[in-house]
Image (tube, one colour):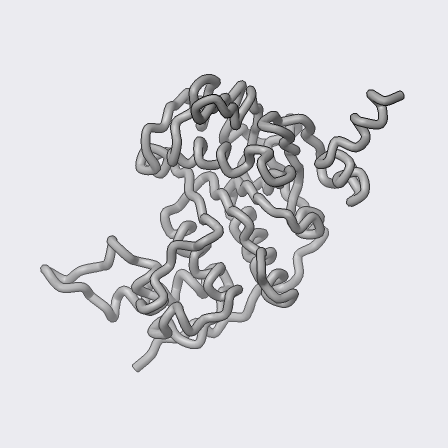
Length: 273
């Protein structure tokens, strides 16, 4: 007997309006101010500022080495920052481990997904927190909950008994996001979720990001696919050489302007003049 998730992905939601913490509506979920981090003589973060509101999708962009991943590791508790402040829900915090960040309802999906290919979908979703009846794992209940979870997020897989290694790249990404969402985060960080996916699967993952944001979760999206930003983001923060250098509503940008912000070509031109 198998349990299947039969719902298809939600319809295209381009043009839907979500109001996050842009200074106009909603409360701020997370504020980072003056965050610094050095590894020996190398200063990776140099006074970074960032803010995120509920239901807001924030694109965090910058060239390789700009400090994006380091900043998100600070926010998710993977590394400790040297100076600056992190405020979550109006309370200043300092994370010493990922468990500290999870306690503040901050979740992250890394690019490598951290899924176990030889386990089935349900086992990956509930790894380490399997429902039990006495000392035994209640597999029927686990698969029932897994199917319900995937249905809620409009994720389609053939069966929750299917091994992760049999899934497509987009399905694997969707399962990883679903697992993170199951912890009921207020903030969800996604590191390059559409890298190496086919076009159709990219659209599926972007739709899922919309679904999550519409539940009131603040989403931080790290991506080099600039077109994805215009599909799902409300606002972008640009990092350059360890600093946050620009912040703008995506509605005020076009792709040429965004590229110039990332490469600082406009700044270089102005300085040369």
